[in-house]
Image 1: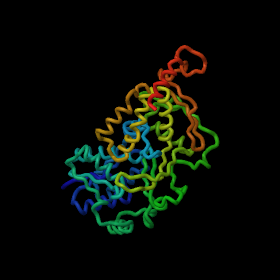
Image 2: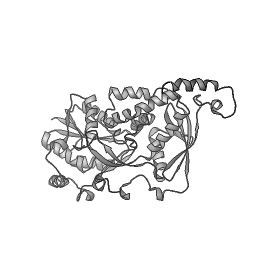
Image 3: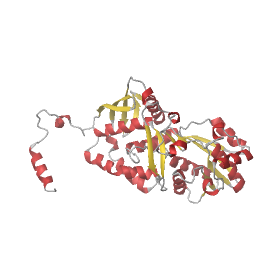
Image 4: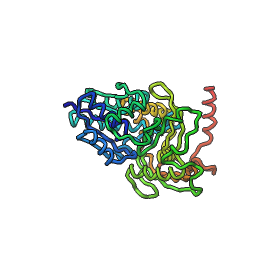
Length: 390
């Protein structure tokens, strides 16, 4: 019997897909779940899959790998899509796709499948990852193949196949929610019309600014080789460090974004994102670079950042283009070391101090006090040279 590795969340949609694959492809389905910090009850995931006749359910803990090898490189690049999106969903798909293909090869599966809809970016991100690691493995995208057109069709199919339907899925289409250790995104329903304000109840990991504490939280983040390594002097794994910052940022109302974005496939969509820890790291990393890197290196990074962010957004994480841009971003990252002190209060991230042993910032040169380390007579020639370019 042929085998298909399905990216399985344990929810209604992927459970329907699991049954549909069994019916339409006469294949054994291997349920694969990547644990990258999403809200998940492992026992329920296994129970739901086995109820549908799945013999092999694989759940991998990839949280540390995800943060270290995917989130941190983006933080080093200050990657922001269209001005404010920190790419929380975009960066998760490449890792899942990579591991899904590895599982497929291990168990000699002929195909992989995902539950991404036909209008979204994730189908592209998954399938570009599949193509990079397993060109000979077939890709099955049910949302582009089946005849189920609506939420009511899905509910009817679930009832027919005795698939449990959660109460919140019985009526109107629910919000589309994606979450991992880096972020939470919410789309659909009232959010589809940009004139509607996002209802407060959709936010899962951040307090509204009005309910955030009046007292500020002071934190010290230490960096080494361009990556954060400790908070308030305590060394933490990438996973634990991000979890800590998520908690601090979330309770202080940091990291909310409401964005109408341009999808790769050519349509606009509105999403509400929560990235509390990511927002803090983004600000802190820019601060430590300001005292540890030279102007040319920093400006080169700034020039490539929009291209880098769009490359990730579009699903090209494993491409030669992204790797080439990453080399520009990581040039001299060994110099990015030191400590940043931040004040987190009422949705604000305020930089209090930056400290580095690097020589990029010269207190002697910048001082208003007279000193011999800066030759002011050269400035006149400098201005005359540039005035000729007008």
